Image 1 (cartoon, helix red, strand yellow):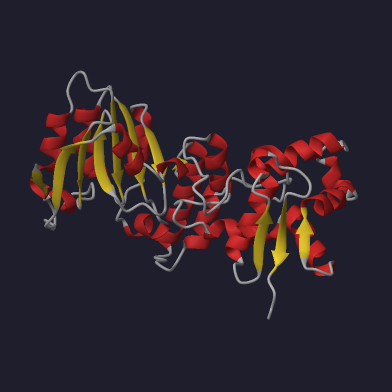
Image 2 (spheres, rainbow, N blue to C red):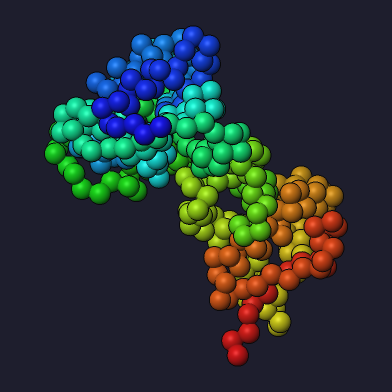
Length: 325
C-alpha cells in the first residue's frame, strides 16, 4: 500500500494494536514534537528508536535531543548510528512501513509539507535480518553519553558554530577512553576475515570487534585500518617481513617472536599453549594476515595450506611481500 506523508502517522497507528509487542523506528532526523504524537501509539510497547544524531543535525535543530527523555520516561531504547539514512518503522518484525519520510513535521506533511512517499508491506524473518544488517553496530544512548552530547551541542550552539564536527564529536561514542588506559589483548584481533563472508552479525564477538573500532556499517571497514596496521602483533609482523630475506612472515616465526617479547608473552601468562590457543581462536592470526592484505593489496598477499581452517598451526599460513617485478 502506498502512503503519502500526510497519512504516515495514521497508518502507523492502524498497524499497532493491543497485541503488538515491539516497534522499531529508524529515521535520520527525529523531531520532539512529532515524536510526542507517536507516544499514545507506542505507549506500553517495547520500542527501539534509531537516529543519526550527527553533531550538525543537533546543532542546527534538524533533530532534537528531547527524544531521549521521552524514550527514558517510557522505558524505550534509543540508538545512534552516524551512517543512518533509512526511514522506516517495523511492527513485530512483520509489518514494514518504509519510505522517504523522516519523523519530523515536514516529513509527515506539516510545516514545510515535503512531498514524501512510503509503502506498507509485510516481511519475512530473512527480509527483516537483511533490513537490520548494520543496526547492531549502533551505539545505545545512556545518561552518560547523553550528557556529553548535550554539553557539546549546547557549547557549539551558543557559539553559533556550524563547522564540521565529525572527529571531535565522534570521541563521545568511542568505546576506549581518551586517557590511554586501553591495554591490548590477543582477543582484540579480528575474529573474522573481511572478504570471504566469514562475518556473522549474530555473533557477539564479531559485532564487538567492529564496534570497538568505530565501524557503523559493514560496507565501510576503513575505521579498522588503524588498528590492523598498528596493534602490537602487526608491528611484529612488519618487523619480521622487513628483516627476512624472502619478505615473509610465517606463523611459526611470528609465534617465536611473540614468545621472546616479554610484554606480548605476558598476555598469554608466559604459557606457549595458551599463546597457541589465543592465536588459533577463531583463526585470529590468519584473519589478521588477511586484514593486512585487504588494506594493502598491492603490497602483501596471504598464503595458506588448503587444510588451514581445519587445522590451524605452524607452517599453514603466512603473510608475504609481493614481488616488485
